Length: 328
Image (cartoon, rainbow, N blue to C red; front, side, top):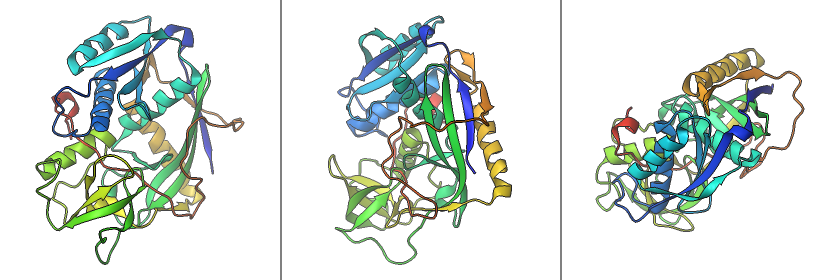
């Protein structure tokens, strides 16, 4: 069963929208070795440093971050202080917020804040387990779609069971195609290591663990992993992945029994209200919509997924040097 909820948007006339450019030439934190992840890290720090704004990294531009704020308060002054602190520069003037930009920033901010209670899997799935990487069998999750207009943001959620297929036998061979969490993008194995590799962007496992937490919200196990893979994508430098984040198969999505669906929905709405209690200077007002008329969401989906079909998850992350964002 699919559930529909409405979030009341602030008046768009009271909102400002700016883009910021990250200085990728400044000294990177050791948990964010690539320019791309350095931008992601700065965006997430902005989100967690100011609870009333919405923000999202640009999907294509290496340096750009999108930010929405309430013009009637002091958010703009706070944002400028954060820009000075974290080496960001406003790109252009304050612009009018559009529904497309609002939706993009709402989705990214929401998924950042509710992790690790709900972890991103692929483009439109969430899994409800902080320790999902080491949990076997079906786990509670949601398929979600979000669409915004100038008055409301519509959240459509369908409770499902998600099965992450972990490899039980054998290692991945160099040259083999695999899927990597959290994006479940396809990549190629370059090397396999039975211990943390010396030639790695991260000096210790704890640095790799912080990287995953601060870029994607994932909590890797405290214990060092049994093996690691050097993975190459179609562009950029190869990255080191723990074996628990590499798989040959996409996860399996299984329909959930109706009598437990409402329990999962209740947990999601409760956690969303807890982790994202305010939005752009006003309380988060979210109500069930029983008269929802489906509309096309602006969200981009990499794959069209159906129940019981194998689907894909997400990729690794980096860590944050600032103590306000480095709590486990």
